[in-house]
Image 1 (cartoon, rainbow, N blue to C red):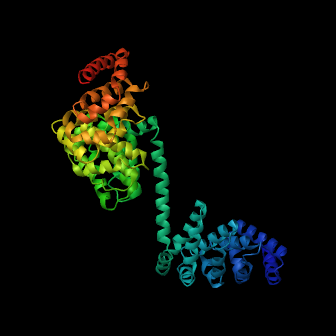
Image 2 (cartoon, rainbow, N blue to C red):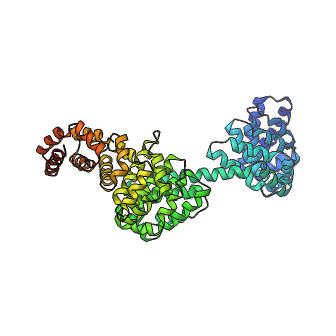
Image 3 (cartoon, rainbow, N blue to C red):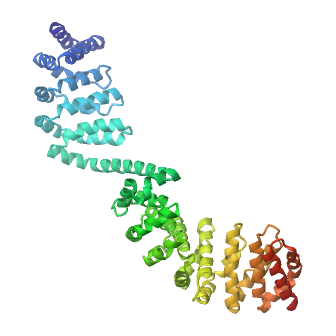
Length: 507
């Protein structure tokens, strides 16, 4: 075998000068066999016969021999005593040039060769420092999309980075930015997938484990993190864990609200919209169970949420509105307080006109109505705030919504306004054509019983105003109302009789 090797090396010497590819290829195959059989012995022989200085000319990007030559260098450089000779033979510059190759096999073997040459060898690292390897490797790293290729470049970079001169070159070439990008990408991919798994009810409940689950505990620790991606994943995970009352009650009792409020506070100034949106989503879901509402209000949720009133981002506006609406449901004191907040009411009226964002528009209307419906001791004051803020016309429009629940919420709020302050709101009712809206609702056979009932209550309430009374007479409500006396719903038929009497008495 040794004779074969010597013969192959002699042939290689001759062939490399006239670059006859076929004979070079067979010599290279013989060398690789010898190295596989006994690496150390073959390497000594290659060194003794002066083969290394011949290799730079064979490392030609266009040549089909190149991957084999690079492979031989990689094998030889596994021996510590061969590393300096590889450097002295001038192999580093041509290997660095090969990093530009698009041939995957060339890249793989070149990476191995460079990695092995500079492994644990001080002298070779110093040689590398005088080349542009740092720049080439970072450029290559930026271009790579495949994980395996990035790994290969990492393996070459790790030993190189032990040299102080090369450390600086790598930093200047932008390696740290690349690494941060990799970390962020991995983190994003992993956290996105985790949140996706939490969208399944059973998988979510399994991970929650009654609030004792290690995954749930880990997610909690992400909320105070300084990394936006972790904060986002944490808040989204909590929003997903908060999909049933049991989980919500447990989470509020274990102090999650405070963590979310601190997170939101950090994002009032440095406003990361996705984090704001996720944290508000979590708070909105947590506020659904009745027992949580007063606890969350005492924790100051409404005050923190109001800090985002100035947001110009529809997704944030939408969640902010939903959170406040959930919080004040059945909470009279909070409704009194928020309903008399002129700045809030003014912003709601503005958002009621957000034609491009149906979600924001719908939620603003619903919150405006909820403030009136849930307030108690200050209900009159709340009505006046809404009237002065220009909200009445929006509530009238809301009564024509295609969603029955929204129609009903609007009618109840309008009924309260009419009962408490008809004088102040008369002009708005006329301007918004309230009477003809009510006529349509009563005439429409598809209107639900509660819509018919609340429309008649409202008709009776506006009769005390002269201009509105005139409109009621001109639209001949008596015909529509008398038909409803035969309605199958007892509450509706009873209210129809009362309304008919009222209309007759005042005609």
